[in-house]
Length: 129
Image (tube, rainbow, N blue to C red; front, side, top):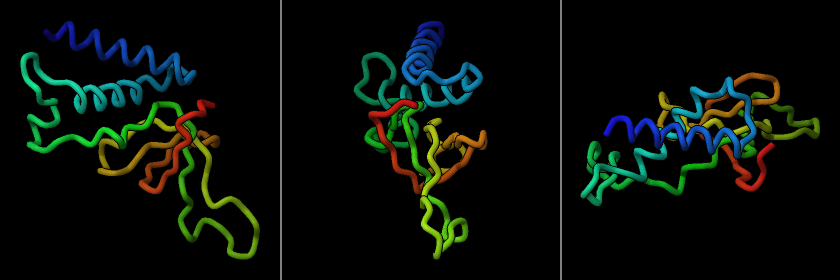
């Protein structure tokens, strides 16, 4: 059973890696994303419950699972932009999945090489930069 679970995790990691065209160095985020998806969508055999539902007792929200590697726009805090200059109100980046340490937050890899954790994020699920 454990071997089958590891195989399904690695299949999801491999498919996300190919679909997102991200560097292999992001593999820890790929594994976290794969585990999050599998825990919310699958469960033990012969049961109609997901693993998330067995542990927490509530139905998982799967609509908030965004594709790994899709374009994400993290909204800047009020102090990060000028009120007089015309500039973007969000940082463009790439979705690395949910932040395991902050409920409701996502990890966004910015073009500066920094990883930002935030909950005010807009996603373009059709664009994989």
